[in-house]
Image (cartoon, rainbow over all chains, first blue to last red; front, side):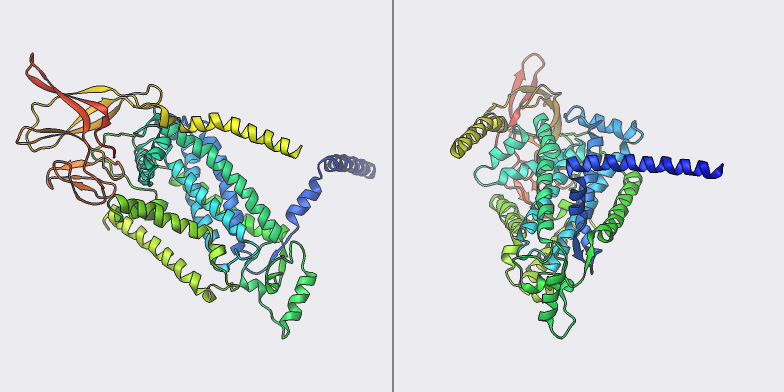
Length: 402
Length: 157
């Protein structure tokens, strides 16, 4: 009896498996899904330093989390000067999960800015942006600027006091642009003062314009990454034998795709040891992303996102403070008084700094990879970092009178 | 054929960009709406003491929205001159407030300072506080001086 029943069960299972398999074959014949998945997952990556190389995927995971939490905020938020604050106040106080979702979006943004900064720092230190990966850096720096743009336009939407005064100051900065400044401010504000059109325009920029550009450049960034392979860092190209040439030649001969990298110095064409992206690297990527998202879930619940009283253009007591990531730039405004200096400070110095950051691969022309052997790049970079930290400290001191 | 496709694509691009650019640039062409708003009598305001009055001012832009409160600092001088200063900082347009102890207008954003007449005395602001476009009318019936302002500043800041 028992064996007959077992045989029946086994037969049923075999049939179910066969149905699934034929369904899979049908789908794969029509879409090439397996091939695509294989291409996406089976790539060699440098083995040493794999944890440092999780920052890019963590950035992507956090951007997707922002998309996700942002869509949920749209279920309640109304982009109108009359209803933005009441709709968020409803979301915070009445909607049982509203404050958590808003907390996710805020703490997700904070974490994203930190992680994308760390990702840029890692790439800078390892000089991964050198030929042929210059455009990886250029698209990455554009992504960094887009994230900062999203952060500031997002801060302008709640139409509480903090958001209103952020809007006033940020849109007013444009007014100092030489010659066409007044026109630029007028275009963003939709009039002379901040008003109803300012909010709808900022909303459109935050919800469509910047995300559209962001995902376009993410596509380009990932395409370029897969085209040239992950560079890693100098540690991935050390040689151990007495005959480095022979060792490098052996590496180039035996390495798996996407290596050897083309149009690069021979010794950097293939890492000394590689790992499989799937499942080894992606497991590390997953752990870091999950840890960050878990942190954001906790912070979003525990700390949430503040909502000031509704915007009041006639306040005599409110002290506006910038978001922490714009504190250095805000301090810069304090230090550049008078009309010509404001334009020089904001547009010339910050603009040239941003341009230099974006064009770093074309400024750092040496073939050296270790930071210590690139002092002509490392020293100016350290100077900029110290200047930014110093400005932030001055700003904290000014705003909180420490 | 290649040329034709290029021309066609270019034509679509041009046609699409006419309304798109027009829409984008429309705030440059649409005239700001101007309103006169009554602030109130200013007779009881003491000399040499900037006093904030509030006016609900309609927006100069967009569709009808509720009027927003704005501050007018009335500065009466000993010689009989009266200023209707806006409290909009000329640096980044934050709201300044009069500090009676320091006898200065202070800006909380970047530390701009102005004297009682709105002249710059410190911090980054590039020009003096602007007055609202205003007029003061004498009402013979009650013997009051009534201040009215426009939703517009006298200077471009």
